[in-house]
Amino acid sequence: MINALFAALPERWTQYEKTLNDAFLEAGLQVDLRTSFAPEVVDYIIYAPNSPVQDFRPYTRCKAVLNLWAGVENVVGNVTLTQPLARMVDPGMTQGMVEFVIGHVMRHHLGMDLHINGQDGQWRDHVPPLAQDRRVTVLGLGELGLACARALSELGFPVTGWSRREKFVNGIACLNGEHGLQTALENADILVLLLPMTPATENLLNTDRLAWLPKDSVIINPGRGQLIDDGALLESLDAEHIGHATLDVFRVEPLPTNHRFWSHPRVTVTPHIASETRAKTASQVIAENIRRGEAELPFLHLVDRAAGY
Figure 1: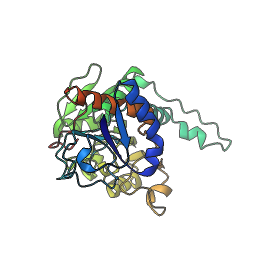
Figure 2: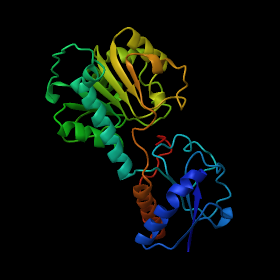
Figure 3: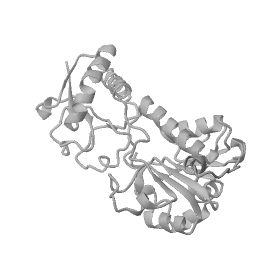
């Protein structure tokens, strides 16, 4: 019997108990899944970083910590965590993110706000360009960014992708490094942020880099709130350099009611709904990693501790 500790908030247990047990059965695994064990008998920890479990030293038998979140910035620096750490790469989350990004890119590309908000009797004959004439840049070519970049490219948008490490993807102009970042931003009529949060990416969009974007460009951020310097963004919006910002993630969540983003006419706030881990598909990912661990195969989606993701 494999002992798996579910270390997350109680509402997650309600959401995941059945789907995890179903996934274990489907994978042919005999797993005793509980929210409490003596630490020394735990084989795997199914983990959310806001769990009460913050000291991993008592879990001497634990073979891996399997994160339920895509982001690991709140756990990767934990010095007590010496076990392998796997991040969540969930097909359901990926599909949800693609749908969110495509929806908002198309919203801005087609100028839909003009007609949705402009029901005032004026006949506005705005005709958008074709996708082939609207340049889109995706910052971050991990699992989520790459899926979004490919979907946008298939719709006919010229897509530039930027990542910290060099990548080659058919149909995507891939750039990296500081010079590549400037080129990527200069070619972004619509910019999508899907980078992880690391010390190297915090405030990536600052005053100088926002100035590299074309006038009236649009920013869509479903990645991490810390990727953007809020003050610099507000200044650029006030100066009418940035045309609009659709923001789904923030430094403080829920976003405080007195934050200027709520009232700014060039900002759309969505409440961190771009995508979320889906219990059914995430449970299948967890089950596969436990199956691999028991078969002494390499775990999937291991975190690079040095890179932070």
